[in-house]
Structures are given as C-alpha cells and as structure tokens.
Image 1 (tube, one colour):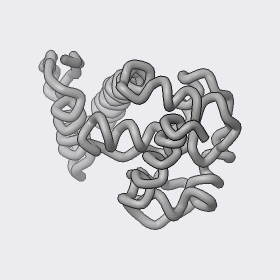
Image 2 (spheres, rainbow, N blue to C red):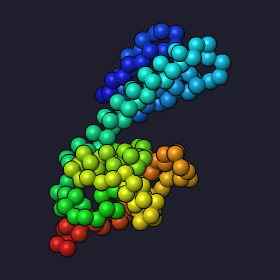
Image 3 (cartoon, helix red, strand yellow):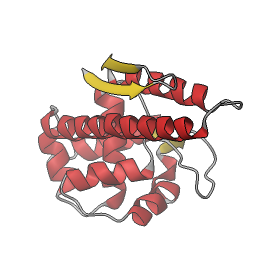
Image 4 (cartoon, rainbow, N blue to C red):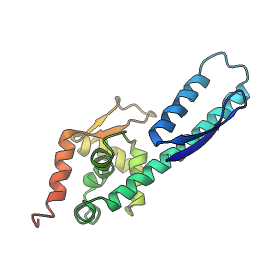
Length: 179
C-alpha cells in the first residue's frame, strides 16, 4: 500500500492510503479540479500544483522501484540477466521494463522514455535518455504502442505490443534451448 498526503485549496489536509493507481487517479482528479479557470488565489493554486507534483513523483518512484524489484525477483530473473542485462542489445534492454509491466503487473500502465531509462539505470545499466528515445522511435517501434503521436516536449507513454511480448519471450527462451 502506498501513502500520500495533500493539502486541498481550502486548507484541508488529506492523508491517502491505497494502491499506486488509486492514488494517481485521485491526484489527477484534484489537479484537474485546480486547473479549472476562475480560481480565486493563484498563490494557493501554484502551491497546490507543486504539492500534487511532489506526491505524484513520489508515487512514480515507488512504481519504478516496484518494477525493478519485480525484474530481480520474477521467475524469469536468471534468463533476464543472462539474455538481456549481460548482453549489449539496447532494444532488449529498453523493452524489458515494458515486458515486466505486461507480464507481472497486468499491463496496468505505460511508461515514458525517461521512466524506462530510470528503471534500466536502477538495474545497473547506464544508458542515455536520447538513446532510449531513439530506440523507442526507431528499432523498437515495431514492438511498442504509444498513447499519442510523438511531438516535441510532450511525453509519450509506451506499452508493449503483442509482437513485442512474443519477441522478448523468444529472447528469454533462448536460454533454455542453450543458444
């Protein structure tokens, strides 16, 4: 269970406890409410938005840590290490966090290139953000689905496609066949 706290525009402090998705939805709801025109005090609005951003980033970092732990503890951990992390294939490394979400978290959410980079870095692989973005829009594009058309300055959330799942399963099964 994740916990978060926020302060409403009227000064009320709220403590939230629930799943990451529930907290994220609630924070999105209140940030949308605050973004409506006609707000009385812009200082309160800015402070509230900053508080929401901090809480949202805390929930995001918890979610990313959960992905890293899942990669390390899953039933395929040995195959992942041998076939993906110990090799230099950038496409496989970039697709790994999306595969983990698909397989072990019921494909609950998509990830931006920055989030993918953080997970890969937490797994001990150094990779630059531009390289992740270029891989997602280039070589790995046949294996991922974006939630919107890529535009400069706007993050795209990627999910693994059916074809991507098949590809990574084949990569991981190469360990069992001794390739």
